[in-house]
Structures are given as C-alpha cells and as structure tokens.
Length: 227
Image (cartoon, rainbow, N blue to C red):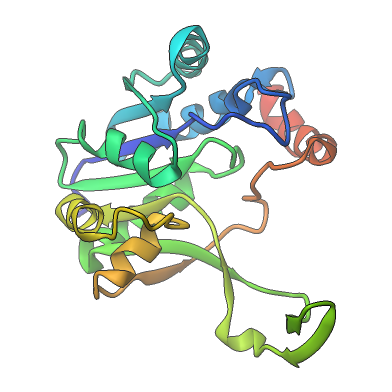
C-alpha cells in the first residue's frame, strides 16, 4: 500500500521564451491557466493528500496560487528560487510526508494515473522517474560536423512528475554541489549513488516551451476543458 504523499508543483518559471516575461504558469491553454491543469491532476490523485506550490514573488505569485486553488488544489504556497533546484528545495522544506512527488507546471497533460504509478514505485524502491524511448536518430557532433551516432537503446527522454522517499530527496539536495545546476531531481538522487527506477512515461506528457507549441496543447486539452 502506498502511504500518503505530498506533491511539489513547480510554477515559478519566468516564461521568457513563451510569455514575454509573464510567469509561464499563467499562460492560458484551452481556457485555463497552464498551472490549473497540473493542479487539477494532483488534486485528483488519491495517493496525494497534501501539496506545496512554488510560485514567483509578488502579485504574480498570488495569481498563480489563485489559479491552482480554482482548479481544486489547496496547497501551501512558497516562493521559488533562481534555479529549478532552488525552487524544489524551497518546496521540500515544507513537506512533512514520507513520500514526495515533484512536477513541473509546464507539463499540463500528466494525469493521476502517472502520478500513482510513480508513487507506487517510489514507495517500494525509493526513487522513480517517467521516461520514454527516443524515436529520432541521435548523433554526437564536433562543431557543425557529425562525430558519431549514439545508441538509442541506451537513451531515454525523462519527464516529470518524479517521485521519491522524502528523506532520500532531502539528502540528495543537501549533499549536491551547490554550484551544480541539476537538470532534475532524478539526476540529483542518482549522483548521490542511489538507484533511480524508470516507469513508462506518457507520450502526451510534453513540456510546453515555445509559443508555437500552444496550438498542439490547446487541441490536446480542449476535450478535458469541456468536461
């Protein structure tokens, strides 16, 4: 049985490539702020009984928090830091549960089923991340010249949410080089020397990065908005 878990929802990003300085979490997708979609999925996950929302400073942070609450989440709200790992650490300081799941608000299509699978694996193994096989051919390059191909069988594309025993994730953050701009929490736990287990990701669980991607997300989320 999976013990009750806490979710950290990261929504402090500035959105410089997407929203002209506005927080990315407030970009409207299919009639709702981006953060609302992930907030609703977390609120619908039975295993998650508490949440921490990491927001920008000031009035925009209050707006992000309001959008999450309107979607059914009742989070503790904390202010994010300069880097992703700083924002996770700020959220982690407010977690009291033995299990924690960390998710980026920029991935609005993650559903309760994915959260539940990750938490079940983390409860048993300590750390779990979702990942997908890479379809494209991958190569290493030297400048603008192809150096050599990479073996796709050894490479996966990592997503969030990512789930961990809270004590393990805290130790990974405490012992990581303070200067390291870690790509995600799975990498931090792996560098600690602990195994990180892979759960099948969701191909629809893409990260919104560029404004040109919005129509795709609009189309994917339109059906959910109508429910």
